[in-house]
Length: 346
Length: 119
Image (cartoon, rainbow over all chains, first blue to last red):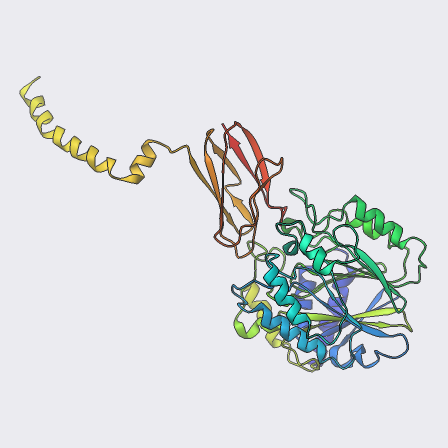
């Protein structure tokens, strides 16, 4: 079992080294999501290790810290495969609160709500109030900008941000930038940052030391995953050109409700699971609509992402763990999620 | 008129009248006989507007229905019409009073595009 897992890791690593999106590689990531997998970025070389040996144990020393990414809570969604998205968000918060090393803050990468309704945002607020980490940073998803061009989102979650909700902050030597790529979308296009935001970003990064670790987060992936479904951002190349000179760049996105990873030079791309419902692998279904899974498998395809920053190597380790995982299952059985993958494509 | 033709007319006429009455009462046949210019439907299904291009006469009302589990919109690229957000099974109608080509898209999923051609 152990060797088989190591093979999987090695193959996944090889796939990650390809620049293109590799469905085979993706499926292996999906399979691994069931047991937790750590990706550490160190000098542009990805190193993986199983969950139980994870970096969480070392976090908290010196300037090291942990933060958590949650995404796509879609409060208000009530159809198959998840009639109770509030409950699964609550499970995610419980999981965060149970982490051995308390995260310094939480990042929500958008689609807080299903229909931008005040009642949905109210429900979200109620659940998030229970999080032990009191500071939460948000970027909007397209579901949070319905009807009112994101006015309500800005009032509730975007105080002090610029434009449609973009902003940056520093935390223990790491520079974080929250970007909005769901506003003013053009017919036929994908996600869009827009000229004004790109100018702001260029200015925001100017003058920072190339050794400063950078974390970019936005709702829609900032790399092109599947254009047919709009899974990419039309002007992300421009944004990424501004971070090229930095030694460590981590890009965290949501939107596609599944884990995808890619490493390109010193930039590590990562998408998170949803806390609400899974979506199909690119091209594996007629559309990107919610993927229906048996109730007992739902918690294996929903999850949270925690990121550990190690000051010694200026590296960030990204750990995905499904809601249904106990969090210590390096020796756990990977057959359940593998069976799930089979059922998607069978 | 020969005697044989007379016989056919006597027998056939009531049959034809009966058929006319019958057909008049059948809405499907009526619709086929007189294509109702005023109504056309676009179904939003699996993140696709179907049919993607719909051709209608001036004065036609097009109704979009969202059959997906995910909300969509139908918004004219040139600002002619704009639906509210359509959740599952919700509808939006617009009446086209001028000939022309009207491209539109879903503002939430802009890869979804369609066209109404008004003749």
